[in-house]
Image (cartoon, rainbow, N blue to C red; front, side):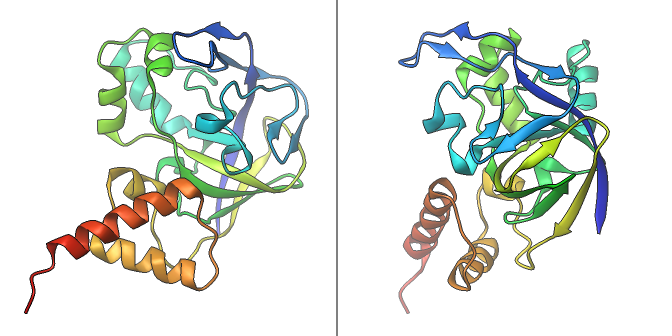
Length: 220
């Protein structure tokens, strides 16, 4: 059983204007003090400006690891404080970018389930003001993970983060983001056949990997 720590709980500080159809982004998140309530669509007091891309039940909470943030702090020459990646949870001792799809985290009385990786967007790049940021962030694979809320409740900085369950298929959000190998796709499909719930985004990646494998098969 893996145990880490919740370093910060982050909620939107201000909505910023964007050039996309939504018109605003809620990526500017800051650490908040005291207990925060967690519900099926995220944190009380937080906003998901675009639930199509960064919200809804399967993307209710976004977590990012301090270890990955430390890497970027060194790379960028500035302190990437909690919330700077648009995350709701800054955790330590938990490899959010390598969490297994379906992995379950217990934080206080809240139970979360790992669903899929974060896909960087232009709003993220504009917020940080880093050139070529989307490509650079993606190339490192330090992408963090989205989680769904299985049981709501309250969390606050200082709580333990306990990985209570890790599926045997072993396919991580990082592997899904990088592109599934045939063996990984087979394991994920088997887990799905056994009842594992995959988000629509994960199902699309799996279907695409299976289609590519089929196209590459050479007739006997």
